[in-house]
Amino acid sequence: FVPILDAKGEIRNLLGMDIDGTKILREINFDRLGVIFVIMVFLVFLIIAYTYMIFFALKNRELEVQRRNLDKAMIRLNELKAELARSYEVFREIVESSPYAIFGFDNDLRIIFWNHATELLYGYTKDETMNEKNPLLNKKISTLLDIEDKESLILKVFKGETFEVQMIHRGKEGLLIVDASIFPVKDHQSHIL
Image (cartoon, rainbow, N blue to C red; front, side, top):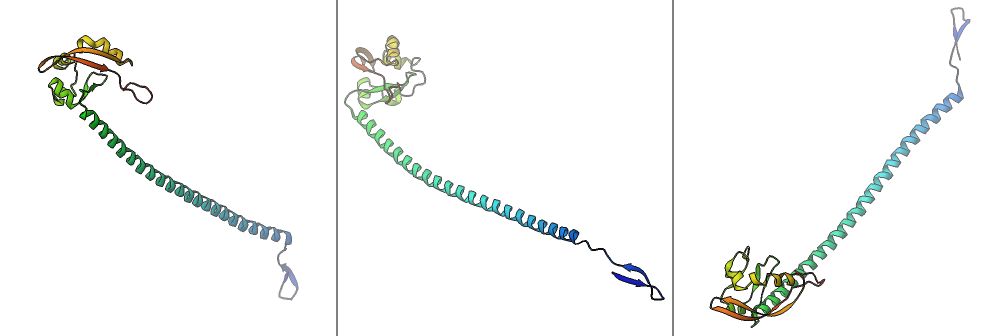
């Protein structure tokens, strides 16, 4: 405390402050806790930031591996497509080169294949017979293949039956007696195509 003296030199008042050591210690500790709290929050945010960085780095790595695997799969798919195209072309050439008349039609009775021997037998080219929108309404094709009279037989074929029959067809040059093998084309799971 500092004494305050009057003009005679007597102590009139004491100037000072009551120091409470516990209160000061509490304030210092509170300030320290505040600093520690700020540091801890910073460290938590730092850990979260590094966790996200590691997560995104791993995700990026995973995406890179997936991209490489997808690239390999696409290369393999293109190789298989090319192989399938070659196989299909060989098959088409075998059937096209056959000395036997071979033709086929889909479920809508549209002719989808007509080989060279068929052209020679019936006298009609591929362009004259294939891809007709409705062959039942096309008199040339229904008469040519005698479809109108064989509709029940054709329906049985589409249910999976096979027939060896002698049929009368009409070519450009007139009537033809044809020994026909009529069968459905099936995939590897026996579904009719």
